[in-house]
Length: 584
Image (cartoon, rainbow, N blue to C red):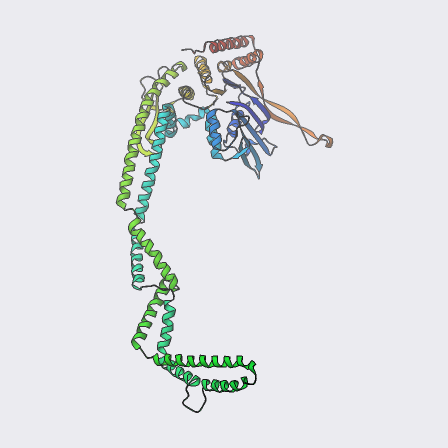
């Protein structure tokens, strides 16, 4: 329930604070007095569209704040959104609108927490529902009518619709997976062929060691220079150990040095260390000479092996150019594409299995939609009967009404196109309500529709913006009684020009425009006054004020006849509220 509304610098309102109560709250005033501005402010506080014109001329900032009384379901939802209640019972929705470079920018808060538009829309659906003659557009929208019918159908209907939505999502996923699989089949086969070829080529290459190419290149160098290596080995052997000429070898020179140091060590024991080093060097040189001689003798030309090595080198270099650039990278790539090839061959679902999965999801979706359609047809029959019953007191006893349900392609909301069919006059065929209903007929229809939903609709506050335009007399009285009926289960806010409706109010507000003088600039600097139009709201909290306002609505002036009429209206409304029953 909306308990408090604060407005600052919004449209023609400079500053306003309104306290609403339970039951029927009525706003009256002359045409153009600003009644709809108040409803626009409520809409803005709950995330409705605003423009720079929403900010009062001369101001750069507007603010609207609506305080609602919470309930257990709303408190649970706010907890899910990580928003705490204020005083464990209040929800404050506020909107700050600022002017920047000629454009309106706004920030929304719930209990002081900045929120996005999506969250605010979710909160709005749980708090307020606004009904106006402009909803003719909604009445013509199959999706909106479908939502209304599902709400009327109750929990079982909503559960089935949720079930349909889940199955539809599963079907969409299966369908998209199948389409993706079909679309990518050619690419998959091409990739399969490419990877098969590459795996075979790399497998035939028998890649094992990352340094195989370096080893083969070394072997190639040795095989290409066997003669030079033999000659150089023999030359080293002669220099170290056995010379064909008279030139002494390294071993010979070390032997001479050893003999000399042996003689010297007899006179000086300190030279024994050097003698040992020379002997070690002689042994090392001898071993080097032996091994180099063995190496040289082992060398022999092998043209066949050289050809094999060079062929293998060419093969590995080709592999590196295609899959490297190094052999280790080529080996890593080989290991990776083996896994990819296995996945393409073994892990991918076949088109046939995906088609089967899609078909099964479609069958489940069709069955779920059929069940939802059956529930809707049952609810439609009940709604038709109840709505006609609600329309009778509204001087629409002869109308015909039917909820037309036509099959359509399945969606997340089912497989039904739903239209409200209407005939205001006997003998005339049923036609879409949005196309043939007059303004007054549409007003009464929407009011009757809300009455049908009064028990199923959990929204705490219902707002009616001049729902009674175009009607008078007995019909206006019936509308007043219907609004009172709704106010027993909901808080109702109503903008009206009808004294019959205003008389039924539990709380009555009069909206006026006033011209006031405002000082521009500072007084000490010779400030000047400027006339400005502002909206003012007065709570008509005593019988005299209400009587005068009703008289004004009824007669345009406070003549004695109008006052008497107003008193009769108030008495009639009081009797109706006490009796708790309407007029047939």
